[in-house]
Length: 399
Length: 172
Picture (cartoon, one colour):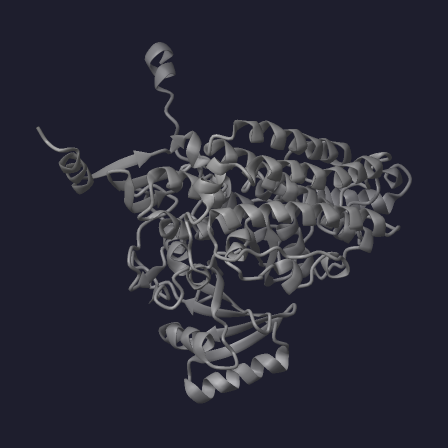
């Protein structure tokens, strides 16, 4: 009879290729992983993507500028406000349109609410992968409050089409400020409760500490941005680095980690939620009065109330809705800090009313390249944990 | 962003060390771009990455645009960041369409910037740009047996015919 040690040797010498996904709850979307396993150890790994490629970038070339917004929202379906901001910001830079201060603050407010929302989805699903089922319910409870706020302001819970070229579509309604302020006060308390559940949970700590570590230099080589890079100790955040929207006027910190393991990634994102709640509160405090959308009738729809009385408004309205506005030839790359890292939007204009090229530099797509470094030579269970901590949104990866 | 004079200074320094590698500059809407000779793109990228005092060592995005009907029609864009000075610069290489079924080609920068791996594969997938020296230049988002380069401007927006076998079998 064979000794247990011999059995173990036999088992570890055999390399088995296993296909995980594309339809698997632990891959957080339609991601397929081809994994070479030696026993329980991952020896080689290749992500296979493209299962939800829908040709959004090509479709955008066939739409007038303002009709592109709902398309791009649907790329990364968890952080739709960021896609809108990247696209609208790029077009505003192409046509040299300055947005009013109130619009800047409103956009910042909704971006940060969206950041909290995105991190909540991440925290709930990733904790679920590690067996902490209750986290999912708690996180989605708070997420629902954010969706209520989105619904209040924009009429939609997801894919709101709230940002427009030139500002935002509508001012926030009565009662929004009070509800939002209450949320911003409550959120740090809730984050404290999440930490109480996870931070002293022995299972969670053992599953995340020292797992999936990637060096800072390697992450930079791989072009990784966002919380993954900051968890490794690199304080790189586009909100601080490049001035856009109201961020230069707000007071917030950039949380960074030390070693860059999965625990640091968790800590950085959780700390970011608290900072985002602070930004939301500051935006409400400092919210300037004035128009919420630019007053340039060549690019922005005239107010509805003017249409029955003003012929000129009607003409502008008709032109904008039928043909859209034309943009002079040029190209712009505009990038912002999304919950996953640098979200860049490249727009090429050829003088017509439709963009000649819309390209999104999606952070999930680029960050996914670091997954091999995180998971090779770790246990397959830790690979699932690392994938959750990587937080890829496959709608954004595949576009 | 370097401002317009700053961009010219960078161009002058590259011209001193790598004569002829940069063909022109453009400064449009506050964004600085160096237009590089596609045959010497690695010279320019390596200089920007390694030159002390510049160190544009973070490639944030690599993407391609089709400028049809302009010639040369394909523009390969490299968005570089200098994280110390917090500056961006774009390097652009224009590639002509060689005609027939031949693919326009440019050297792969995966050795300089490993992050370009997926992004070059994406550019190959959608525009049919061949990146010479890329370790694994295959389609990444589209199926391996896909024919054509769909993001090119002369690729028609159509659709694949959908066959409803159930309907055909029962009602056809």
